[in-house]
Amino acid sequence: MKSVLIIEDNKEIALQMEKYLINNGYEVELASSFYEATYKMNVDMDVALLDINLPDKDGQHLIERLKDKEIRVIVTTVKNDEDFIIAALDQGADDYLTKPFSLAILRARIDAVLRTIPLSQDKKITYKDIKIDLNDSKVYFKGNQIDLTPLEFEILVLFIKNPHRVYTRGQLLEMFWEDRDRFVNDNTLTSTIKRIREKLDKEVISTVRGIGYRMD
Image 1 (cartoon, rainbow, N blue to C red):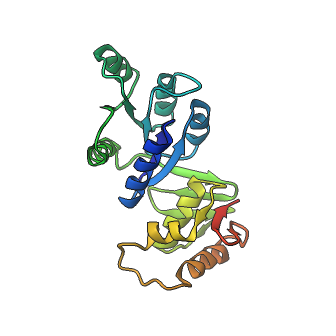
Image 2 (cartoon, rainbow, N blue to C red):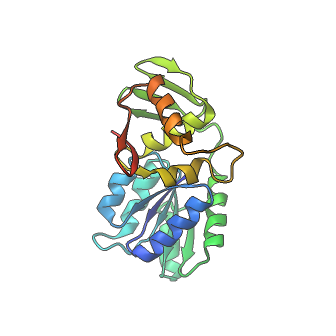
Image 3 (cartoon, rainbow, N blue to C red):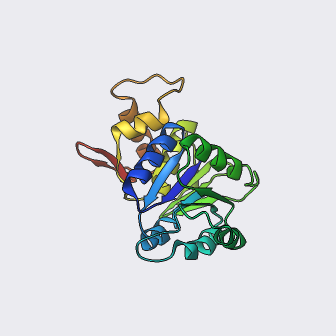
């Protein structure tokens, strides 16, 4: 599952993009300011949608930081000035979209940028005692390789990429079971989380009572 960081201070626009992309199979993180974006980019992301006009600092200064993290950058802004566009591309932006734009075109641009990522690109995630090799779909806990099913692997990756973020049961069911050929009943998610805990550590994913789950 590909991940997108939306850096946008307009809440309405950000939520529209988030809903559309989640419904189309992407993982999404939101940041509404320059400094929130610098924190969120430490999570492994594939593409950033960057609105240059941020409230606390010029978003253009984020382009190089994002590229240093090997995150592809699509600039999204109301500015349609040729010199401005050239400057953003010269700084390393992979694409440029002038607002307003259709969500379908946005998705097409994201997919086009994702196709530029080499299949062999080394991708590893480490969180506390857990290490994940995304290239080989392998998980290590305290140095020992752990066997997870493809579904368990996808869920664990989501939580490790987004530590401390609470996901509701509804969000998880929508992301991992909707439109898939997988049987679902009331206990499906609970049982899957339980199996991940048993294979790793019972505290690795905590229950947020009445809401869902998070990685502590």
